Structures are given as C-alpha cells and as structure tokens.
Image (cartoon, rainbow, N blue to C red; front, side, top):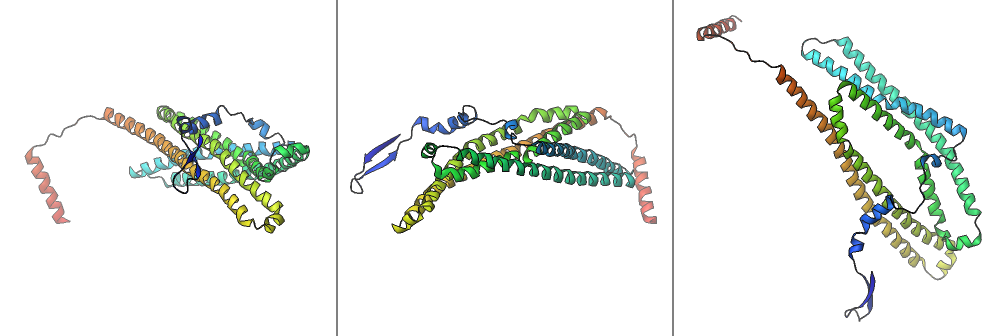
Length: 346
C-alpha cells in the first residue's frame, strides 16, 4: 500500500513511502504457487511446440531419438564393464591376475566412450538442423501475425517493446525445439537402463536408492518453479528497458535538440537496475536449487553405499566361525628358536 507523508525535515515536502503488510510479505510464495498452478497465461504442450516441423524435420528428430537411445545406454554399459574391471583387480589382489581379461575390459570401455561421442554428436547435429528450420518458420509466422494487426492494436500493445519481446520469444522457442529435447530423451533412456541393470544385479540396493530418489525430484521441481517466476520478471524488466531505448532512438533528433540524452540514459539505467536486481535474486535461488540437487544425488549415493556395506558386513558375520589353536608354551618357544636360526642362516 502507498501513502503520502509530510516530513518535517527537508522543507516539509511530501514524500512517497511504501508500507509493507502481511499480504505483501506472503506475496512471493503466493506468486510462486499462482505462476505454476493458477496461471492465466496459456500453456503450450510439447506437441504444439513442434507444430511447424515438416516431414523432413520429423525424420531428423526420429533419427536423433535413435542416436539418443544409443547414447543413453552408454553410461550403464560403462558401469557394467567397469564392474568387470574391478573384479579383475580383486582377482589380482588374490593372486589370480588375468591380463587378457583386463585388456578386454579396457578396450570395451574405450569402445563405449567412442560410441557415446559419435552418437551424441549425431543427435545434436540432427536436432540443431531441425531447430534451424522450425525457428525460421516461427519467425515468419510471428512477424506475419504482427503485420496483420490493425492500427488500433499498436495503440494498446506498446509497440516499443515488440523488438525485445520478439527476440526473447524466439530464444525461448529455440531452447524448446533444440537438442535439449533430445537430451531429455537420452536422460530417460539412461534412467531406464540404469534401473534395469541395478535391479538385475542388486534389486534390494536399487530399491533403497529408488526410495531416496524423490529428494532429487523435489530439487528439480524447485528449480523449475524458480525459472518460471524469475524468467517472466526478467523478461518484463528487459522489455521495459528496450521500450525506452527504442523510443529514444526512434526520436533521436528530438532528444538531441532538447539535450535529453542524459534523461533518456537515466531512465534506461533505472529499468536495467530493476532487471539487475531480479537477475541477482535469480542467481541466488538457482544456486540454492543446484546445491540442493547435488546434495540429493550425494544422498542417493550414500544411501546405496551404506546399505551395500551393511549387507556385505552382515554376510561376512553370518559366514564367520570361531577357531582356536592348541599350542603349549614349549611349542611356541621352539617355533621362535627355529625362526631365529633361519634368520641367522639367511
């Protein structure tokens, strides 16, 4: 809420002060909830995002998804062959080292790495080619829809912000139809293959890790919420700054004639200061979400290692047995004398 107060200092001139209220203190959480669940803005499904993809683009995306399927299975394959390498190291410590087996495991890991590099490069290139075609079509349709509007639409839509919002919209669309969509498929394939491998070799440990996985999902949801709320605020702030710049440049003769360069620069800087504050807050929030996500991954790893260690320890205790050596003191001294004799002869 805003109110005017007359201050005695400074000549008694009225000043504009802002009073905080309980509703305003609760605004960030309410705004976060409304931005995600109660937003009036129309949402776009992934299928509609690829509305302007041609048959050629869909063919490229299909090939990219196949390469993503291959690259998604590379990480579980690397873990599989690495486990064989660890078995070979354990056999070497027990005196049964097999150099041919170790060489085979190393070659397989190198081969998986080469396959991963080739498949990742392939699906990235194919997806970017499809993105370039779709982005060009989006720009044509976007500009065409603006030019089809009547004069009254430009009076109510703040045309100074069109150039800034046009660029931001195209960047958002490029992010949506780029190789990141195929990368998400790769992550899904990796998740499926990893859980299949884990359930095959140790279903109980895999269940423990799976039970802790909602922590990582919660951290991802927090990151998405932060991006939804802060992204729109930064877009509005930069659009307002772009509107001032467009207005000043379009009437640069008038600005120069009245010496308003400093005034226009100050107005532009004030809008950028607002965007800067929002950007700094976004960085802190994104850093918190990223740290929470890394901590969740570490918690999942620790949970699996802890349960696996306890399981191995319980198996060792169950297979242990007591034994005793029945020796007299005379036998012990005889053994020590024999050891000293052998040492002297050496």
